[in-house]
Image (cartoon, rainbow, N blue to C red; front, side, top):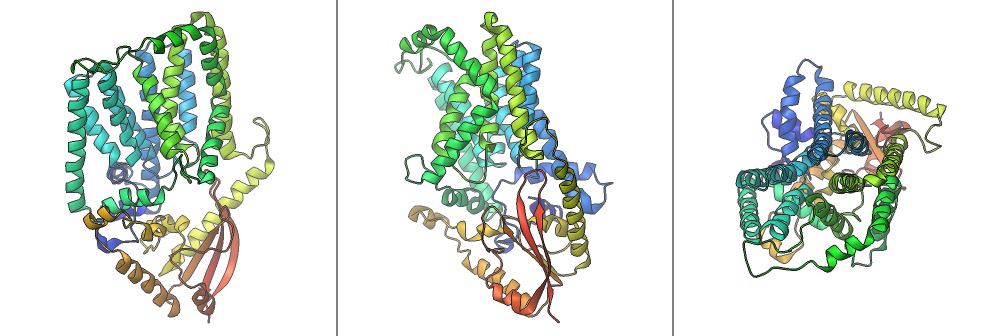
Length: 503
């Protein structure tokens, strides 16, 4: 992400074919443009820190705004302040978990995602509010694709529970606008569709009906941990179901479908928009997103948790007799979410109130390692570094060969025969040129320093994907030192090796 922003600030286009695969960005372009005002506002900061600081500042602002929308909805529903405060803590803790608060478009996408739903709901699904929902839906699509679900859920709700005519009309407008925008985006950003759509089609092998048990197991583990994360609120839901089970049965028993009068809703009995969104987002998680590797709990916290919190806590308005129990169970969820999202990510799971002294020393060691690697990168004139260290190189104006997404360079061409005819650009030539450029510099010892890594979680000796033949490295370079390397927030671990040219 940071590499793309840096190129845009220099007047370049990260989606030009000529920039493949160094500037690959498999997310949308919106986040990079939104970061630029933060870059300008923080212009007094040293250039080495500016790029990273601007991205993290933008991420932090939109995490807070996303939580604020959840709170605003609850205020509008006249939920008691103590419950709103508890929900805000749960949502905020969940959004600073794992990789969401890093230099990624997730927080901006979630903010737009929630706006798509909040504005029409707040304005009784008026014409102007639906237009705004479509606009924000398009922006969310170009931030991170799955956030377009917000507008789709909103317009489908309008069809099912407000008016079939209005729902069909605005759904048609939305998809027509999306196709038209893709046409213009594809003309200006040549590789955009390849990176952000085709790549994800190729990469997402999860299917609930498939025999890929690894993905299904991954989904089930996340459901289990979400149960631990929101234990108190789930218990409250079960209590409500037991307390008033006959009312819920009667609701679904007498619901009818009206398919004759186009101006009427599809279903005769209405449910809350946020309950509907909770249902739909959970279905999407189970059938499509939940089994995708590399996004542990992220989809659950971004597209399901807000609606789960709103729809569950809103029930406290209807069951005053359970208000004391609901406060206790909400407090339990605040505790469990905080423990899971903050404590787990900062201190090893030894007990929520325990202190591991080794963690303090580990933090100091990691900071010392960062300073050491940054110093090495700063001294080099022509360097080849692994993706985790690319930000250090970019901040110092040095050439980078791996954006963090460059490893996906062979996954951007469509496999579907129909899509192949429409998107026929062949990236093999760019990929080969990229590899040859690196190989030539390795053989001629033109790199002052090379830093490679292998991921501990993947286990094994796989080096960076831009190294075609590790023997070329061994013949021309020697390892000066190796060390474990850790990202404090995400807990990702790497083993780094630093190479210098042989004399």
